[in-house]
Image (cartoon, rainbow, N blue to C red; front, side):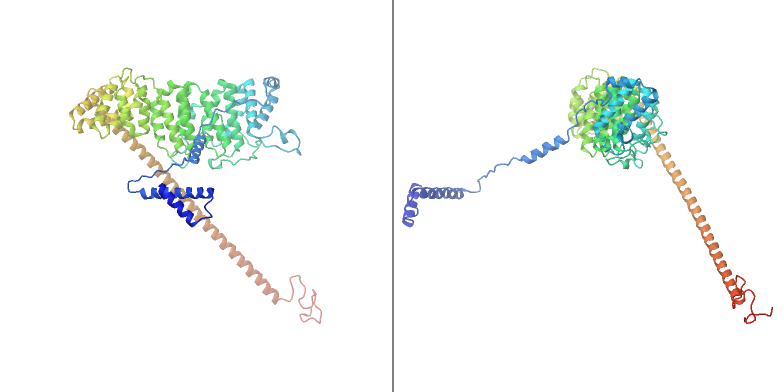
Length: 602
């Protein structure tokens, strides 16, 4: 290399004796030559075994975008408590000393502010004063003020006697409670709320007039859902319900809990402020409800909300199921046989928000189970319910479980879906594990009524394993599990159990076919009634058209007769000497002169 550089240097001096002799120029030139020489040597050394590596660029923008998405999908925090704006404790004490009529006028003024209107005509400032639009903060303060008046005067006096509850229902459920969650032309006509309302006392909504409500709205109304009241009014009603929960407390529960369905339905509003108010109100109602309302009011309404076509309503309903499971675990545990099938159907929803809420709700509800033996395996079982590929892992967890405590219906509702799926697995070893778990579990069943709903789910599959699997050990395990399950069901033998289950299944199929036939007959009757009504309408239409045609013919005939009569009169007038006024048509006199051509000598 040194010899090459000296040779190159001598060549440079020979060809460029003056331009490159300066030290700095020569140094920079030699550096460039050196770099060129090194790159040339690298190119020469490249062969088929050479490996090239490139530095990976960190996707800063992508990471920022993912962070933004996660932040956007984060849950809303707890709303701050509502505070009164005008009515403090001292001011409320002064107002309560008024007469009943004066106090009612104060309540009406405050409720008008809750709905987004002015406290009085033109805001109390005159007709020429500018009018400021109501904001969410104003409605929050007015809702808290009205709740303070309710707390001081009494819930029955203000809500029932003064008609405030009636006005709330008029704004939130104008079509009645039966239309809540209703997809009138879909799979859930009418909303399915009529049978639930028999347990809740809702006031009549037909006697309220909307003449005094300020309908000047600055937000688009949800007319597609049949909502005619302004969004500001619905937001104010929801804020007032939340204020009753926060300020009045337990005494308002009989009036607030039946409005859970109305608050849930508003979660699908096109207005963001109404949606947030509805979500906060739903949370507050769930937190206020007592344990006796869970089975008869809370969960039936939440189940009906899952039939709504709006995904936001489903998401909030599932989240409130999880919240109810935390607040009332004992009542939720008893309802697990009803909860698990309903929530499991929402795991496969097309909306990822609904799917995630369904998984969280299912886990929270299953964790309320009081069986200590199954508690460690519940996360794996829930994961297997939501993701069928993890069924084997859940079965292994259950196989390692030692059953000591009594197995009740809620425990069976958690385990049986996974065990039934495991019995259908291709691997024979997994079927054996399921048989072992079923045998151990069946020995500790509390009552035959607890396991009766799950007999048709497990007995046929166990019979298939006992008859079709080629390994004798697995067939023996299936027969042992089938015997233990038969004893738990209260039958003397396996054949009796299978025949009873088959009879129950046939009865269920027969009842389902009867229901389908009744629905089909009702549809045919409805179609026949529609056809008869259509034929009657067509007959009446034909009669009306025939009558109109005859009337037109009579009118035309009368018009022709009138024209003929006028023509005849004109002809007679032309032939006569006298006009219609009695004067002569020649001389114009009533008595002609001798000189007139029509003079007759008289």
